[in-house]
Image 1 (cartoon, helix red, strand yellow):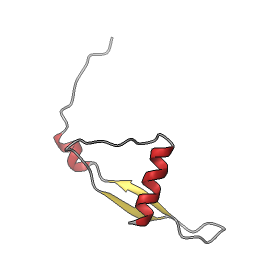
Image 2 (cartoon, rainbow, N blue to C red; image 1 turned 45 degrees about the horizontal axis):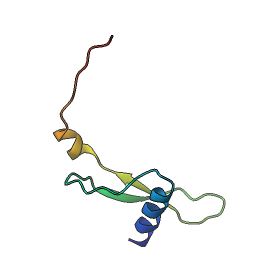
Image 3 (cartoon, rainbow, N blue to C red; image 1 turned 180 degrees about the vertical axis):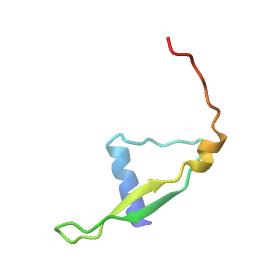
Amino acid sequence: MEEIDTQIKQMEKDDIIEPSFSPWNAPLLLVKKKLDASQEEKFRIVVDFRALNNVTINEYHPLP
């Protein structure tokens, strides 16, 4: 959980994400990255939007 908090705070600081109070959400996971030259264990946040996409209403607009 500490790694998630650290990455979320950094993404907020970098204006990649912003706080939301929406009832809609999607689960996230940490996935281990491949080891690089530093051999330091690093993680990537991934989000599973499949359930949210299934309830999203598509809007269709004709091309001009």
